[in-house]
Image 1 (cartoon, helix red, strand yellow):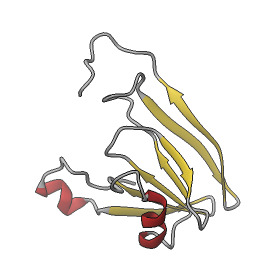
Image 2: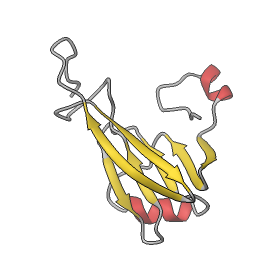
Image 3: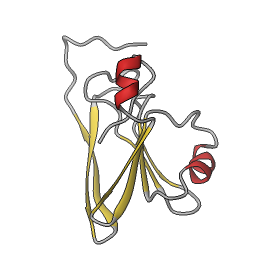
Image 4: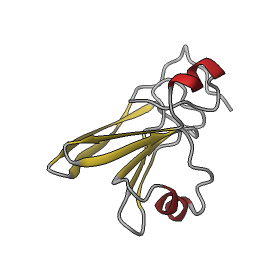
Length: 119
């Protein structure tokens, strides 16, 4: 499952949606590249993604894990390759079963001397 991002060209944008949806283990998931500013994110996502249990997003490369007022889980795994202003590269794992998302873990990768931090 994938969606296009802000740096993807027209060929990839024709192949991938802005938002991708899938149901795994009874959990309705969606993936979108960007959700906008952190301020007001939960309210905006509740309005735009009212048919989703878990929304995974990126763009900022900053890990995020919150729950919206209606109970949707918002997850940003950060980035394992381009950590930007973060001290570590990161990624998330989780288990989806019987309509429940469990075992959500943010994994930190050790710093790599050969990869500069983008500012």
